[in-house]
Length: 141
Image 1 (cartoon, rainbow, N blue to C red):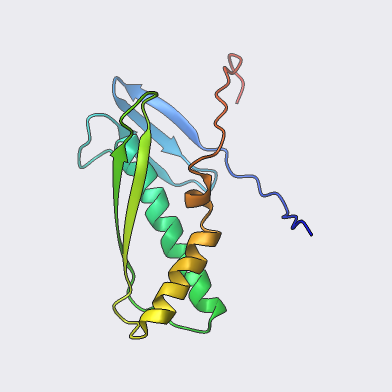
Image 2: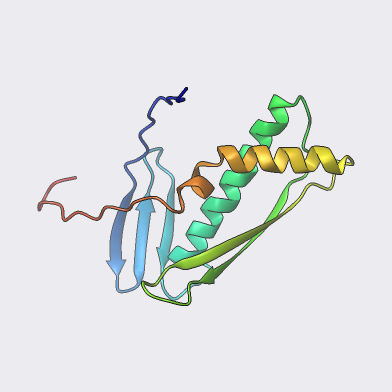
């Protein structure tokens, strides 16, 4: 039996160029941040943004898994490293997320929560997704 999920639409996220190497993005909820290259305290490069998306998705998914198990996850610390692929096209070849659940004494429970979080994390499940890049018409949003 196939499981069907209700489709959720994300966005729009708007990215606007300020000047060479400097962009501001605004989410549908109104959050604004800067992205670009080179990295600085004022702006994050796209590679950091994708790792931040992965870490935050794992963190949120861990909270959801813990709630499902009636467990307080306590402090959650996640460190993400990415490695560029060794062949073309330019892309990440792998990510490694190290999760610290220092307030959970039961290692088996921590592993179950991590496995459940990995299954429901939209970002980690998307990293092999199709990406379509389209050219918009002038003046179109």
